[in-house]
Length: 392
Ligand code: NIG
Ligand code: FE
Image 1 (spheres, rainbow, N blue to C red):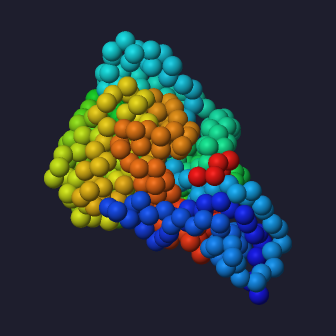
Image 2: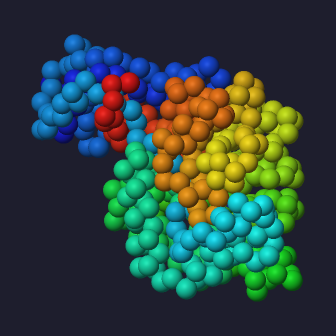
Image 3: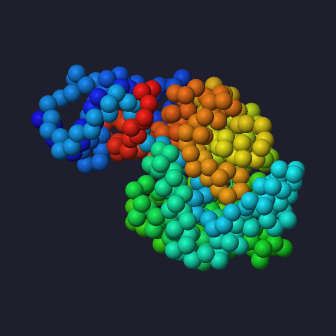
């Protein structure tokens, strides 16, 4: 007799997205579809899943009738800039008139305009504004959300941003995964001596942040490697130090220009490399031969009004493990919705709906190192699931 906390029954279609993943090539489309399914949940984890007629003898404290609807794993959104103050409405209009994202940043706006507003916000204000966004993300089906710092760019404000992530994780039903991103831009104080800021990151910021992370928390370090932002050499200095200190690694690479950051990230064993809109063929091959997950952000291409979509089909065909994320941020992608990202991915990255589902669940979990516990409804995984108001 199986004892369970919850039985979900009368499920029309259940996509288990079978673990462990990450899924590559044809396997990306294998969502493990079970028709006429039931699922038993115990201690927050999937205890049994399968066809209703094979349901084992059980005792369940609670029952949920799915009414023939579909069930999928909760979405994992593995790249967000959830914590920030203010907005950048004025810049959106400038960009519509033809000024580029990089020109705005070089003129001291863009990320730096959000830095000014974020530095002026206290912890409570950062948590409160992010909580509203996180509520909306959950309403759109995200149950695990990565969140980056990167709008503080001083030790004090970057740590405040991390505290905001930890405070939200402790008080919100969503699961948050923290990423430390002091290397998001050069703060105005270091405009004339960027390498001195890199020194501050490696000597002070990285050691301080990892020393005060909560127990049992994986902390990622990330760098915006891009023309006009962090060079490959600066990125290497930061990520090497981060790795020595025990961070897991992420990287923003090839959003606008291919500098070679992707090869660097692969050789350092980055858990994920993100954006990859301008990635050349050789580096797609390097990604395919590695364990590094490629996180594609079509909401950013859309938000920038561009049409240089990441070459997802070439990546999948060569065997790259591909995931999707919103990149929620006030500059390029004010988007809380993984379903919208999946819609863009099917139209412009030419993923099938099944591929987009795996890329938004199990492979997204893999890009956070969580593919053994989240992003799937395989027994043993956390039972983060969505009951859709549709049958398919
Ligand atoms: O991933 N590219 C760098 N960071 C963000 C944009 C952040 C911003 O503009 O505020 C991104 O697109
Ligand atoms: Fe980003």
